[in-house]
Length: 158
Image (tube, rainbow, N blue to C red; front, side):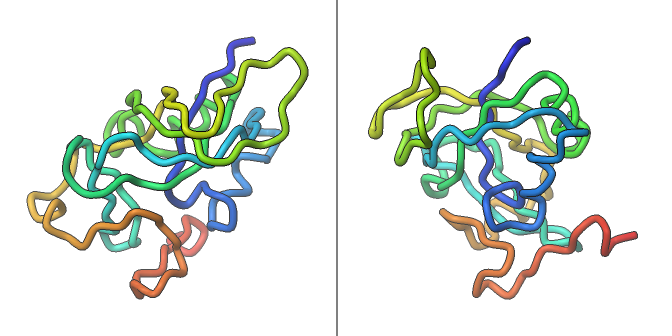
């Protein structure tokens, strides 16, 4: 079974509205590896009528973005690609991330140490509105943050 590293920065993080989807076994398997932040700067904006967090694929602009690294199986990766609207809304692209705090280590498993740079896939977008790069940028997304732009869940959209 192939396992893939993904970096989540928005509604899939711990404490956020879609976190539960990573641990719904009908979607596949996910394991938390570490908290991290992007090695490079990216614009992280909240946009659209549902206040969705978007990491704009414009390396070198914005801020270093905080998130979490997970290892997911192929089934979860397919679920996440569908959930994130790949390729129309988001694209799964490789990103370099700096490891901050690690989860417990599984025997025989290779882990990066805090401060090291590793690679994971991130759901970023190149399909954004022209004004999005000028929106306020964030380094750490919280759906319930003081920005006043509370995320509208898919259940609430229906």
